[in-house]
Length: 144
Length: 435
Image (cartoon, rainbow over all chains, first blue to last red; front, side, top):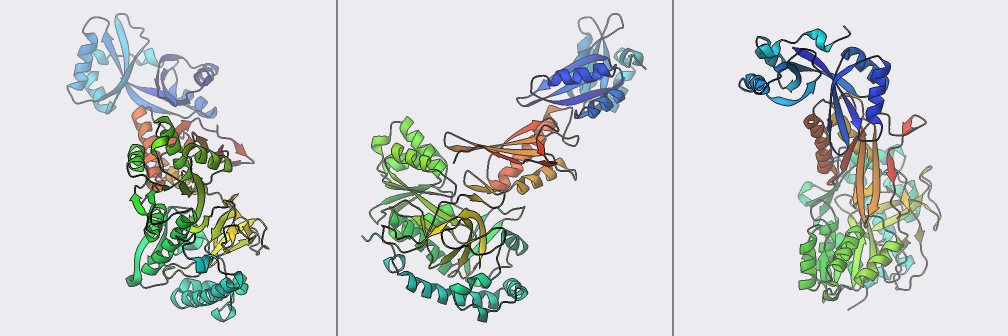
């Protein structure tokens, strides 16, 4: 399924990540996945949260530059070869993967990956009919 | 060899000089009135005609010319000669996107080179010297000006242009350069390199002509000690001709203005009123010999003082102090004129929105070289979840600034609202250089 990822800009300075974590905590928003891309001067925090729209509102109010992008949630078998199989479905069909990271999964025997791709709609079509596409939205937006 | 390049001018008694200036000014005013509609209109608006200008004493009646006029008239609006008579342009960056383009007839170039030749002769240059010109060549006036002056003096001229320090040092040592012309910060850098590579015994330099940026007495002493030379200042601006508008002599206490070509005035930058000799104010030049691109009462925005105190070198030309600052927001970074407005334009273009990202220019001097850093507040428009896309924005800012200014800048993206604002207005520049 497609999930809304919240990404936010942070300067490489002590305490910046804390600020963001605090804002989300105060808004009662749960983070189920987080990854940080960093350069010498700044970083980009990417998160899967329980309520993306609310998260963005709260972050903007605190002066954080952020945005929502569509990413793909892929459920993969927690077994050898599970990851390779899902990747192949995407790459064989010309989908370019920009980055990916792992997310908490509540389904037994499944790992959940968040994948950022150049064409989310097409990627979703490809993956929807496969086992990997079977992700329950309530697993991600747990407060909905 | 004479210690003056044109002794009859350089040691001319002031009464005679004034007569010369009177004649040239009257002719120049008529020249622009006849040939430049923009000037005629400006004069008419002020109610002045050429008949009102009988000499230097009437100079104050003429309207000022500013960078805004140059921008409005870009590119050909102030040209006072047919294109057929013009042979060259030189250019510098303007306050906004448009550059300043100055035109030269063959005679203009000759007179400009004479001015540079006076400067080279004043530092002891003769036809026996090897003169290494390490100013940039091209649109920048530094290289071409000193190159021409060096030819006129008869020096063996090394047209090195700027950069490539190893090659600079190789030519300097192999060919035995005796005079070096470059920016003071590059001179300091060369001195450092010479010291590090243990080349001090292999160089034959005796003098350096350093201009196009501000430098302190401490820096002068440092360069002089490290290179075992005398370091001289030179002043100029593209609008008026280029380097050699004024130059330092052996006394090293200010720069003699080539006032047979350029009449200096000091004005109150607020009221525009002419200030008495010796008072500090904005420097204004009138080019009285220029054919193609004559400027009457051009406001340099440099804060300066003039003096007619007798000089031990024997020159009678009026002297100007090192400029003490600017009356506008122009910065000089590594010899390049930089206006905050230019940076703003680039940021608007790159940001793609109608809003200007907040920014802060940070300048410092490390190892005698200017550093140029630019903090830019991140905005929703520039932000992406993808590092590559943000890097693209950063590089676009860098590349655009490099193409406009010819300067490398370190761009740092910072959190929004982290750049200090005072009274609602952001402080745009932090200049930590101790000059």
